[in-house]
Amino acid sequence: MKNFKIYLLSFIFYLFSFIGCTTAPLVMPPAPPQMPGVYHRVEKGQTLWRISKIYNVDLDELVKINHISDAATIEVGQMIFIPQQKKPLPLINKYSGEDFIWPVKGRVIATFGQTYNNMINKGMNIEPRRPQDVVAARSGKVIFYSPDFKGFGKTIIIDHGDGFSTVYAGNSEVLIKTGDMIQKGASIAKIGPMIRGENPYLHFEIRKEHVSQNPYFYLPR
Image (cartoon, rainbow, N blue to C red; front, side, top):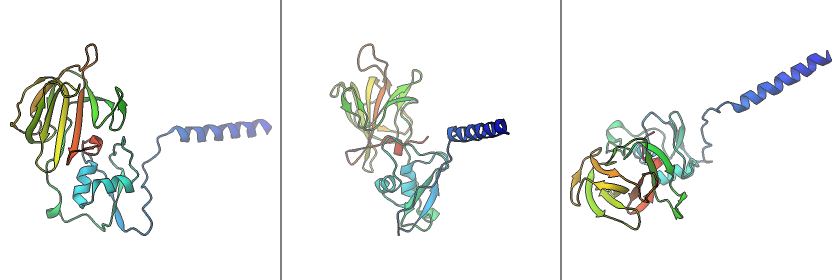
């Protein structure tokens, strides 16, 4: 009997240890007291920015109310609380503008707000998986080019015409010139190492009215 009790206790301990190691399901964040609103389930390809446009809610407000950290990305199936909304806006009023895409495919080696090379990162640094061109994250006009901007190497800025602009730095070769109108996804540069012997990476920023934003909130998973 004593051995059975020991076996049973061991089994229960093992069971709870196993449960604790499994991935916890996504849960809805607590709604602010006395605040009307609805929950939105994140769909594939949706960004926090797109969700804010669908419901006509300020992105910074969504970040604050849902306790989303600067380095966080949203997941498919995650529940986002939308304040002051009973239901989504009518389809005809939904945001239909152009979304952002990743300028290169690769590994993020430095995120927004992280200290990298003794500087606070105002965007993200992306190390490409393979040789590839840098593409425009959104359509717009090239308004700035510098062959060596403050140690960031060849740097391009594209204005998207709605208060947003994107910055692409660390390029080894530039394929466009100031004044060019660029379509989303068009090749604009090639990546090269900023420091000799260092793996090449792209420094990428999204700015709103010249204020740096967290790119994770605008880029699809």
